[in-house]
Image 1: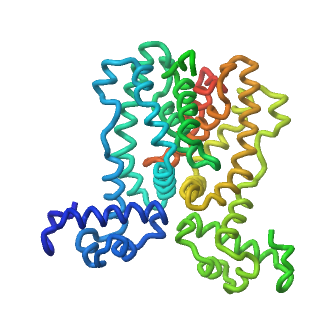
Image 2: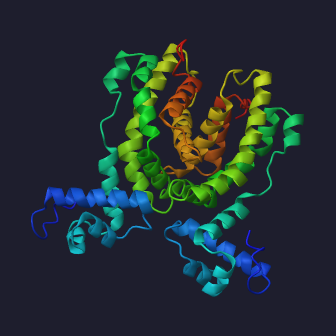
Image 3: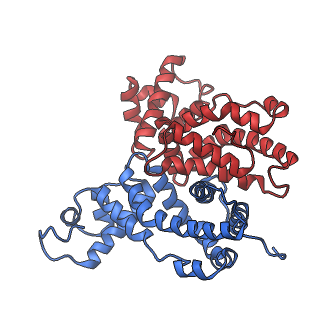
Length: 204
Length: 204
């Protein structure tokens, strides 16, 4: 991003990492509006100029911090989706998904991403490109497979169905009294079942 | 809320209204963290003490401003739901719902409500009680009726289905490139259709 600017001393990856970590923490705690470059520098234990040497605005810095956090590897892979049935794929990932979406970190980041969508569309654009879009593409592949298998209607609008599934999770975790991991597991099973991607086993 | 405190001069409803309006505007523009009592006073054209005489914290003031805004009358009424079929009810409200949810005001308020859900749960609690819950009760009544009519599965979890419908709308309007009223109308039709509440007419 800024490595081609060529100003100042060579960059220290550890310093960059602490600045990015501090920016993400403060964004989650206080939102974009409640965060300043000065606070980020203080939290990272560096001087304000060190931060400005690397990022010219807090918005750029927070966007990069978000990008780094949400670009983790995807499960399932595109290969899994070719090889397995939706039911098997979902059984393989649903418990981890429930734990992840029920975590305080997920709730807090989700709230801030939604919260800045209108005031800071550049942050949502980063989140969309690096986090949401790759996951939507996997979900669409799952749904197309389920359409072939006949469990999702052939004429369903898959983009809308994905919005219903992802929106349900996003909205549920921001409501008062959000579910714990066990509650989230039940919730996700019902969402996938409703969408036509999942049949609960006899025991559950 | 504060009218029983009995301090200071009798309250002027117009002053209260301008303070509440200023608080809502600033909350939408800048979030809770970006808003101060001083800014609210300045925008309302009153002294800071006038504001503090009525509300002791910006959180209380913003919560009341949100409460007042979102407590508007509900359409359809509970009586409509008794008398009409879900299809008719939805046909009667869907265009207004599309215009409302596609409006910049709805997007901006939705973003801020989601954004403060974790950092300021008291605001979400107000929004939940005065806006979300009454609408969920109407949606549940519609869905129970549709279950009787056989268009929604008898074993569907209605709370989850409502989260899927409401979540889809919330999430769609916060995405990059949000739909205009015409796009939102198509989106809502597909959401209601997917849920089992609506059949598109031959012409649409």
